[in-house]
Length: 240
Image (cartoon, rainbow, N blue to C red):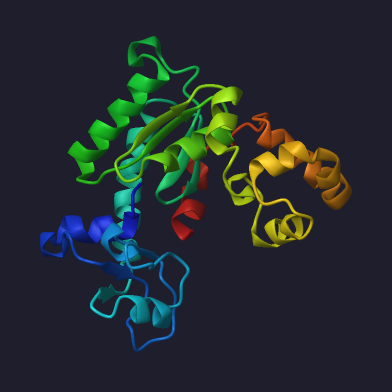
């Protein structure tokens, strides 16, 4: 989903549309940004930023506390749409998940058709927009979903397409490479995915098995399989 909490608030109060909306805490409180509208992001506001820093960047923004009951209700509606196409779904959070549609009933069509159907149903049934990414692996699907936000649709069909897309991007684009690992790589002169591919032994010497895994992902090889959601897990999803 795109700017999920903020999008739910705009849906329920159209007067907020087009305005920089920051969900998390009020400016005079201690706290962080849970999410913000795309209008707020143009000022540099982003998730996990302190509210004080967000207010410095965007003092004219609209600041709100999150309404988790409302977001959980919207999330449940969205999840029902996804589960209509396959029961092989791994929910990552209230508003994001992986769907394995390779075994979906034939009447639903190929993955691209299912993706567009989910976008249309989500807008029609919940009043919210989402971005869909289609990939041959979990990493490629995740990257594809981020590529054209908001209201995006993008496909990465194979490893060559993935490498062409990310080869000159920062190493943080690779799943599992966080700030600490990125800093370690930068200290030995590796900043981009191309640097990883051109310095494989250096990456392995520095990071060991983790380095080998990062190289595999940089080459487009991702053998991970999603962990399907089952109804018995619904309570833990709600708590998250």
